[in-house]
Image 1 (cartoon, rainbow over the protein chains, first blue to last red):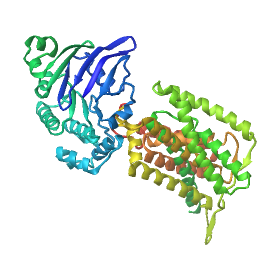
Image 2 (image 1 turned 45 degrees about the horizontal axis):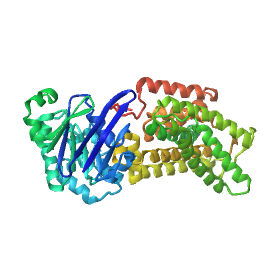
Image 3 (image 1 turned 45 degrees about the vertical axis):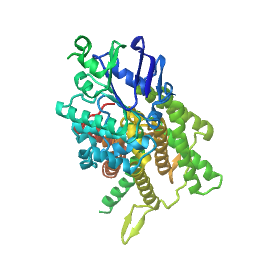
Image 4 (image 1 turned 90 degrees about the horizontal axis):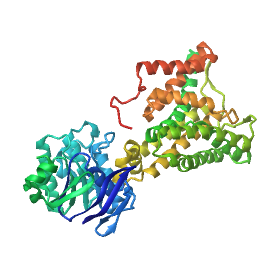
Length: 233
Length: 292
């Protein structure tokens, strides 16, 4: 279980997160929703240590990760797929995947086969440079690369960004499958609230850096007032 | 015919040295976006290390090895002590620091080793050989020059293309943040990158010094030619640096042999201008721009 307690993060004088607390239960999908600038990306960046919080704590299965360097997160079971995909376009598909295992200190060829089985399209292009991949393929590559580290918690930042609805549905279905089959814990940041809630178990809504709502996904999706106020659908 | 052949051979030998120096610049540029102006004095001081070892009656090869190892250590130390503190600040800060190092290392060398000219030995003959009536300008030391640079390049290719460490180094160079998220120790990769670059730079320093004279400024012209070679190749491409070095070496050799040696520096700048006019990104630039 990933827990965040009273997390406050500032960029200079600008406060991006104010005392945010929530828990992402193991083996479930927690959607983090909210408008542009609500602090969703900052939340993930603070959890993975790319940004240092002013105060508050981050716990992964009761282990305090608040001051842990970003480089060690993957080995500790936390994988963060950043916004804009984060494919290293100069490397090949297979090199990107190998890197996912190497960085976490556990590259195994069997993991590579597992990812290729999940995403056959990547297997077909394993020797291709990653910059030739389409947007959907890139998203599959970064998810597959994160899986190479065998994470307990996967942080996903806007995986639907710029993808066709059909591709989004395909990727979300696959993600749901992984959560069910392997007990993966997912924190899913999304602008696209409707799609995100369709696969999430829980949802939290951020507004101007504050956590305003925390509820079951089905409750969030059914609350018309909330949808109009924060979620835009 | 004899002059053509010899001009070409001289150019290739010289080009290999420029290539090594350009490669040292490219290794640092592509991972950190810093032009290391201190590369020349760093190579100079490691050559003095070799000279000191040789003067203490050890063989050339002990001195050669000592210079390369001290390059490795010096590169790592400079990255950790000078460059790391300004990481995350504008790149120009680090570039200015390397200019400062240029001056400091010069001064230190003059203090430690004196600023007079000293002769540096070569491990092989520096005279050409004869094939029938033809004098071939390929010397033993020339063959050693070409061979050692080729060996170092092949080792670097093997490291970057063939090993897990090389993959992590490339990842850190291409995308620092993503590499960090994946668990790559980016700082260590940069330290190692500087160390390797300084090693390659030291090699070029030893090769330029071989059979010639050294003094604290003897590498300073190499930084001009090495930089031109690196820019010719596109600054981002190790292969480009090598090709750029060879093109420059051969061209300058022809200018020197057929036009006049006083025009060499001018010709180097002329070649640079023509290439940048026709291909602003250099000969081996990628068509796709990338975020820095």
